[in-house]
Length: 166
Image (cartoon, rainbow, N blue to C red; front, side, top):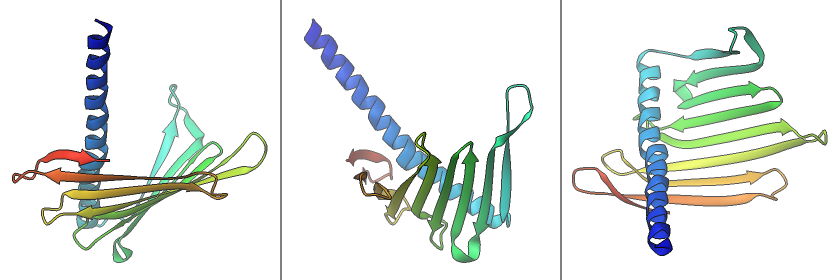
């Protein structure tokens, strides 16, 4: 009985993890590409976000700024949340498809030193503009952290994803 129950949970976790990749890689990328096209068609160049707490009082520890540079095929998002500063750079092609995302963050550690992380993701598409290869690399300034993960997606004739190789 324990083996059957264990197998059941293994299958359920596998389905959940695959759904997570599907959402992030396929749905998230498609939504981002649509956002870039909307920014471009509506001539949006910048936007700002302000945080509020549960009582509706402005949170001065949070700020977020979006700067869109269509002539350079670039969207920059700068976020500050307390001592954590994050800069995200999204590069896209002439069709408005995300081709590269670079995310740098720094935070002040309890030791008084700053920690820097860099995450770079590249996207490759098929002729139907579906992502087929997504490669993410994460590292820190001292090279004590370095990891790469690649997702290769396969589609059926109708353009629906049928499997992903990680």
